[in-house]
Length: 313
Image (tube, rainbow, N blue to C red):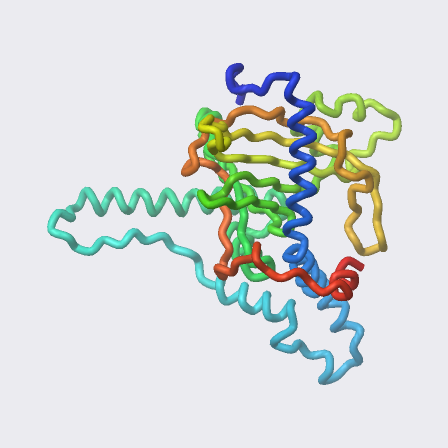
């Protein structure tokens, strides 16, 4: 979809915005570090559970214990998703209730079921869990659920689903909340160079023609969204969105860990989607997030220095 010319940011402001975005990214990662370290620890315990169990001798000691991270998460996930989710709009039998109202409610319920079915298809194509399993897993293992839902009219021409959903890894979502709600948010999304070239033609075209081109080279995308705000001097500040890409070298600490982006996120990043004024109001912003247990994560106490060092290892 082409962005209207009047919504684009002026070219002379792009470098300044890139510097501000990277600075804000470093600030937010530092702010959310205590929670992210805890979430990384939970994820590591979950992934290592099979290895830990297999390392035990045969017999009683190998059986799963109910409070182990993997067993607890999988058991709760199985309980929460064992029955299919049904959408029901409650009708309370009011005097003005009629057959047309019940018919309209039925259409809405079937539409919601169809949207979830389409989301499941998209997630399976990306080798991800179905929608409700992804939501429950993020809530159980991360404590937060963040996602993005776009409605596009282009797909209607081809009789396809107009909904484009995405559930983020909450460890890599860095929101900033003020007194009015979500001010802005940065989402870090691991990807590959081949995906960037296929999704954003022309941005990394120079790397695709080199002799050592490897489409599996790790990369990250920094997606930025902000809401409309007042700048403090009575001037409205329009919300913008942008996507910055960084390609690095494959770095792996061991044979079982995921390759990481070796180069730091810096000025070598390129705009995948240049900044523009998105035009969404606060209620229309496609980014949705919720803390499932209602805890005030931003006020969690910092970890002890020794525990902090051990978790980083």
